[in-house]
Amino acid sequence: MIPSIDDMQATADFLKKRTGFSPEVGIILGSGLGGLVKEIAIEHQIPYEEIPNFPVSTVEGHSGKLIFGKLGGKSVVAMQGRFHYYEGYSMQQCTFPVRVMKFLGIKNLLVSNASGGVNLSFKVGDLMILTDHINLFPTNPLMGRNNSDLGPRFPDMSEAYSKELVKKAEAIAARNGIKIQKGVYAGLSGPCFETPAEYRYIRAIGGDAVGMSTVPEVIVARHGGIPCFAISIITDMGVGDEAGDVSHEDVIHVANNAEPKMTLIMKELIAAL
Ligand code: HPA
Image 1: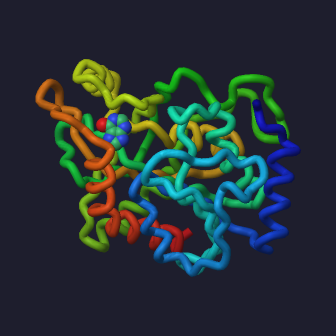
Image 2: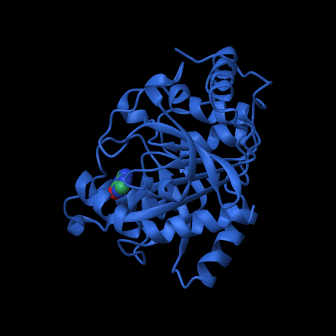
């Protein structure tokens, strides 16, 4: 079922009533990347099950709650656990929380994820700031009748990731001696990891990393005019036939280890907004 604008408004009203909060910044935390939450001065946390119209997250490593608090001097709302297309939700369900965050008044969206490196110069554990994406999902969250109260029929995607936020994050990384990669994220449905041929294909079309999230949320945020910033932790390398096995456990393990660097960048970026 496609959530309606009334559902979005009702959910935002519920959250406003329950928390009294008007967040300026929305955050979506990826697999094994919930640690940024420890930096938030939490005022409210609401499990997804308690939020009207929210889908319920199922995948391991995603605990599924909405957190309201202060970070870097700003009011933030953070999703600990996101909804993936491969879990069986529609694109509209996956991105429903982004619509709700827009109704709550966020001015920027910050996203993290774990991804596979396809750029051969990347190393496991690297951080990659997204400069662009390629939508390889079989569909798009904006399919169907457009509601012009949410955004235009044909939204511009020439700056899916805010150049200004990328510049700020690069400066923060440099100041803190954190090595950073920049590149294009290819988003696809999963849940299979890629075959060696698929990794080669993604490399050939200009992808630097590949993952199963972020693209739907960023499309919806841009539809709503929200500037986006996203950062990937490269948890494994798709280097061809010698790629070896990738497991969800490896992904979580590498993500946990690289997380402090990502947390620092996110926190300082929020402070600098
Ligand atoms: N492919 C797709 N998604 C991923 C990967 C990968 O190699 N690593 C982490 N998420």
